[in-house]
Image 1 (tube, rainbow, N blue to C red):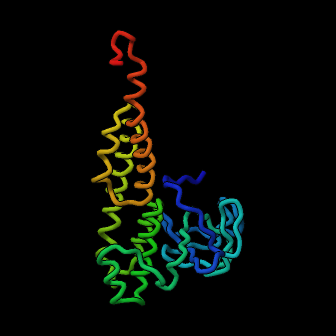
Image 2 (image 1 turned 180 degrees about the vertical axis):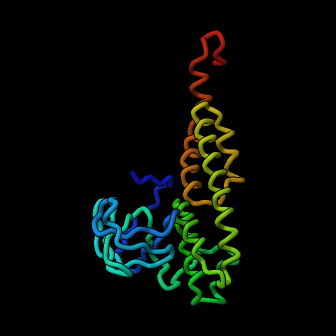
Image 3 (image 1 turned 90 degrees about the vertical axis):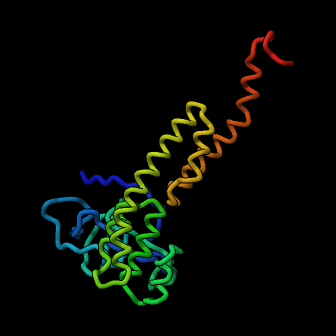
Length: 223
């Protein structure tokens, strides 16, 4: 059985106008199969990461493609980005924006923009796979190389801090939940998850003193 350790990114449909599906296999090259099943005798070709696919249909986690080969590919080994086709939009990430302005037609900048979008959306494996496809001669190559390593470190820290905050919330340690906000890694996927814990902590912090006072024995109740 094919298993990937990854967070669930938002659902995007490749057939939507302005969307692009790109290969992002953590263990490239990606297999193209004659049918939407994993079998030893149905691999008809292999494609490298970073290649754009023409998707014509979808069936239970598989995408039917018409180019660059005709066949089926496993959807989890691709990323679909909407709004970034032909460099239409570049995530605001400091020097990436500056390089994009200087080299608007650079394919590496386009790939890195999609990788950044996927990373922020929660697709760590796909983002790193795409960052590693940035060509050596691209002006964005040094940034892509550094990002692939830094993303993994920041992701691990954000994930660890989130589960620590989750435990603190269960234990009633509200302040420890709130204290993680200031220095939390800037990953939209994890920050949105942490925000849910923070809202719960604030709510519990407000009601907790009332509950405790109500549970005091009559002799200790200040009223």
